[in-house]
Image (cartoon, rainbow over all chains, first blue to last red; front, side, top):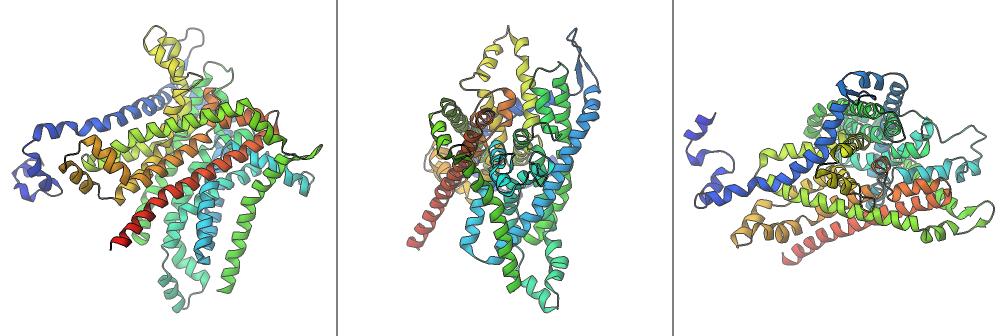
Length: 309
Length: 275
């Protein structure tokens, strides 16, 4: 590899090397030095502020500390505990909630975005995009309070429609789905709008002139082309819902078992010494699931770029 | 076609209802007291509340420090990587996206373990550093964690900004006219990246102002944590605070569209007048 490169004439080296070569000859020494120092702070920061905590998480998840002697040893104990009993229920609950909200948010977000595209009204579009930006950022504790004030036990809408008598309670799985969709649907709308814009009018006309109905157009042209973008959006939605903690922590506390809440409970509060490493093992489980879900998306990205690029 | 229009209108109407009802109901909740009727007590109490002011100021200071640190790290790195170290481009991108895979609760679990080493380091010079990290009046550790969490926003917007300008020509022109590297970065690159910088900064700021998870696990009380604490005995006040934070988010994003959009428009206008 290096042999062939060095034997090439200077002008035939591909890329940008020839353009810079003449300038670099006279002051070679001073120009070569200052390239990498500029990126050192970034890598040092990442190593310290991300690498150290993440490494500690991975290492300590496989360590147990003997409460008497304080000595630590390798063990799978935390990992097995984090995957059994109430913690398994919490993990399953998080996955279930994230899957359901991801599917709903993807479908609703796409339908709303398509309605905006259909309307061909630029003022409406602008309003929807900016409102989506605001609502997509309105999550966490403030969102929980807005929902408690609306649909909580003494909430305005609860009292107005006497929802309590109908058996509705916000502090359940359903309540969480309702609240999560409030920031996920707007996020999906802004994510999927560019892809919907990429669906060309000619394709619709071509399908129509071949005698296809609207349903047939979506079934055979629209959805297959959009599928990678929709799946990409769904993965983003899943990740967002999966990582959410504040909304559920404030709204339902521990009454709906979710892994993020269990991690927070294990970390705070006066718990046993070993409990902290259990939190780290649960965190590791979250990372593994997030990685698995993201891995689904990678091969799909290329196909979408071919049609909508 | 007509049925499609009608369907679209129905969809948008239902969506508007779903998004506006909680806001309206929350606003009503803050002013309606079953015992005393309509009043603005929650807002009066909020303005006079010393804890609210303190926590809001803390959130603001944390947000500004996060944005400053994030930009200080990312702008030079992205510029140098684009210009001189294209081999590192992919690595920087992956590192910046990693916080999306490690959720905040997992990251803070690691961070709190690292902070618990403090006792073991009692005799070393690091002890002072650790104390500074979680100083109650200005917890640096939150700035560091928030900066990690804001990297995806910063990377995405700076990357888009760098793709939109001819960085190499700008830098070469500036350097050949005798500007130093620092002057080139500050007076040529940064002004050209302004929309990207503003958008990354605003999104990070909005994230920090509403952040709850990391702060509560590490035991600090910025705005969102205060809102939850006060909610335990003053439901109206915390809902009013939630509405205030919606207003702040809205204001920030409005600022973003005006600042970033304003510049693009100005450039376009200038092009029109010169051509």
